[in-house]
Amino acid sequence: MNAGDTSRVAVRVRNSAALRHALFAFAWLNVVVGVVGIFLPLLPTTVFLLIALWAFSLSSPRFQAWLYHHPRLGPPIRAWHDHGVIPLRAKMAAVVVMSAGLIFLAWKYGDAVLTLGLGILLVIIASWIVTRPARPELPKS
Image (cartoon, rainbow, N blue to C red):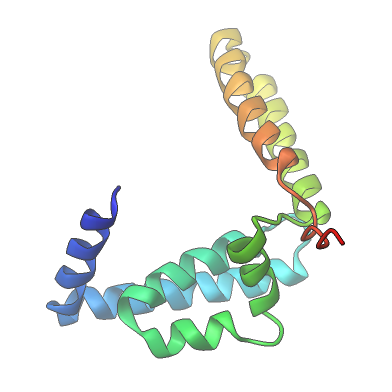
């Protein structure tokens, strides 16, 4: 999606109260799931907050700013936005959940082709996740 596509979507959302309300509700749903993820160790938090931030950006700039600058919810959003950071705990949780899902799939269905195909895809995704920085780089002096 290029910038022109994004602006067309934003214009469509601005012109449709129903779409704006739906995105606003979707944003709040993601905020709730993200907050639950703070307390449940294997449920990711940041990804849901990023989705909420996107939905708020189209439906309510006020709540987008609130979420981005929130003292508890904002730091992981800003870390990803500013530095592409995925915290070590989140990386470990993602790899564990992907591995458990693959093992369950292999055990439940026993389909070697499906398991191998999904395994290759999950290795690619896990590799990308693991190679993201775990904390912002310090400025070199």
